[in-house]
Length: 411
Image 1 (cartoon, rainbow, N blue to C red):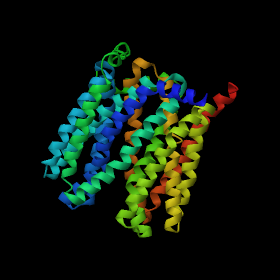
Image 2: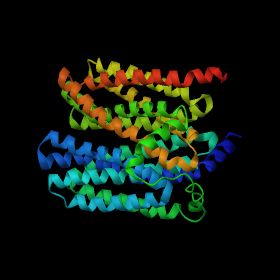
Image 3: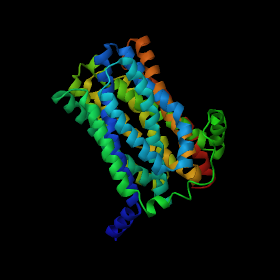
Image 4: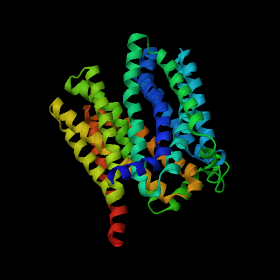
């Protein structure tokens, strides 16, 4: 009986698996890019300030592009936008390979940030389209578990290429991964699969112009009473995601004397913990309620980052960093699934564009505020204290927004 149930679930999630594998191939390229861009930039500029600027430009461009891209996804279709974005990123890898000027690197960061949004929005919208209504969290868990492997393997592969060849050859690797993703998309998105979206891509549309950005933000907030809390919670989670990538390695080296290889292993282990927990947390969310697990996730993040800040030994620091990483798996499947629930299908692209700006804000604010705090306190662990404060506030927002409603309806 259990085997039959598993087979039925697997059949329902077939399209989710296919779309997740496609995203995994592309995310291998993103993992390579995120790892190699700071190293490559520093080798050309010899300035950490310029490295920070060029990396942040990617997220600034993404922030600006989110809403217009979301509108374009609803207008032109998920599959078309996805194919165009992956093809463009494949070509971008070739351009990066021949780039030697720092100014051109900055310009390419802006372009890459815009193109990357054209991948992220339609890829996540496809998961929303394919997710069975009674398995929304599990579907998000499947997607995040599979794609997380790309974030683990990407940097490892990039490091090997950098050692055996040179940093520059990683950009060719980005082109190869993206080209493979394009070919795979041609296999899975065809015939009935593509026609499935034609009806969804009709209806609610705006012309993609900047004067509509304020209107669309208001439209997002008005779509459901939980829309604004979801925006705040996602922003809070991505502040931590940005800080874990930027400051776990810095704190490990500066405070605890880790080698570069050791902190690389710690980051890989953190990504692995996230990946292992995504599906199980999604399964539990579908069974007992995603709102409770989201709140628990922020409480775990609050506790783990606070004790990471207070850590006096490498072992304690690593243990609490791993716990903090795992907390993300208790948050993101639920927030993504809740957005799928509250947004009409013909507005997935537009509303996902608004929603994803919360992620960009988190990725911009986290490193900047964490870096300033670390500089002011002369403490590389200070960014963890920032996450403690933000996650504590997020737990309160989650409890205030979600739990009273559950009690009111007796669920």
